Amino acid sequence: MIGRRRFLGLVLLGAGAATFADTVFSPRPAHARKPEIYQGLVSGVGAGGYDVVAYFTESEAVKGKAAHVHRWKDANWHFATPENRDRFAANPSRYAPQYGGHCAWAAAEGYTAKGDPRNWDVVNGKLYLNFNSRIQRRWQRDIPGNIARADANWPGILTR
Image 1 (spheres, rainbow, N blue to C red):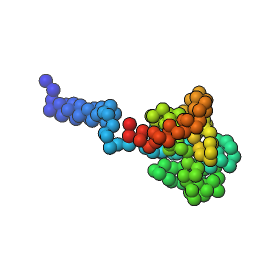
Image 2: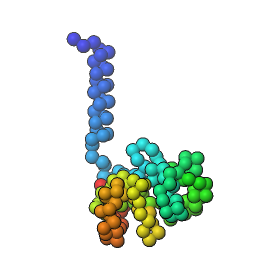
Image 3: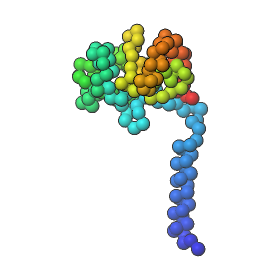
Image 4: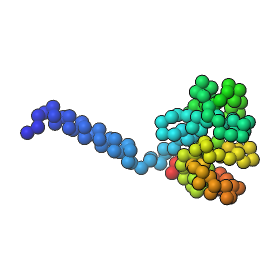
């Protein structure tokens, strides 16, 4: 026979497990949205901590520093220099990756996936990130068509 304390403990443990399972495995409520800015699983940092201004000024992926941070759209953005941070702060939409840093190919296909800041393109003055180099090559086969499809899908795919 189980003692009263042990029984209560088992009931509470079971309730906690059920709540956890409901949270992790339940479908997303219709009103819930995925975060607009891709920030990794736990980092809270946009563009994986890369300096999004450097793609335009240096034509390369440059890792930012937490010392040069700007908060925008519920994400922290890191920059290599205070000057790049200030440029971003003055006009974030000019430098921020399209589709919130989610993969541009996935957005064109109608879903979200992480964007890797090492797989990038600047097209017509806009920054696009892709999941990996293989997906980026696929995206590059029809950049105008993929942008048009992704633009049509965005931001509706955040609720799927």
